[in-house]
Amino acid sequence: MIKNIIFDFGDVFLNLDKAGPSKVLKQKGIDSMINEDEELLRTYEVGKVTSEEVILHFNKNYSLKNDEFKWIWNSMLLDFPDHRFDFLKNLKSSNKYRLFLLSNTNEIHIDWVKEDWGMERYDEFKSCFEKFYLSHEIHLRKPNTDIYEFVLSENQLKPDETFFIDDTKVNTDAASAIGIKTWNIDPRNEDITNLTSMIKP
Image (cartoon, rainbow, N blue to C red):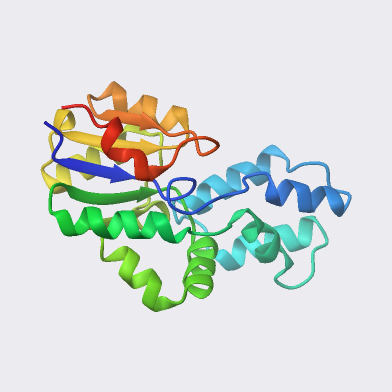
């Protein structure tokens, strides 16, 4: 029986345009980021470099002005539909499951969410979860096995009683490999509000 649900954030609750930053860079004549840039962003996701260091790197290497990288980087973040928030609040109120959030993210993105939503909405969203795990705060990231083991261990969760939703298959595959039940949600034609029909006894 499923007793615990772990949610990803982007393209589960918050709509994303993952290609957004690449599209903006192309408009500026920059075809793509190099491997060094991608590695820096992965390091940033686990909080090993600061926002200031990331902004300086991209401003310097791509001739961007001031905080222009922040605007480009945040262009992937879209809206959080009310129907999903209502669903989450109702799920929380039901007390049927222990709810957790586990997201690969970074300080720049979370700062944008707080500003765009307002702190009241952000805090209300956060309060729906027993624990709210952001990769840059816990210094771990998906799909590395240690991040799932950390969440299970810290909260004394059994893998076969835990259901994990993520839009990235490599992340759900990694969770499945250690016995967690998963749903690799497709944001193009599936919605988190269909969760109960996806959970098998």
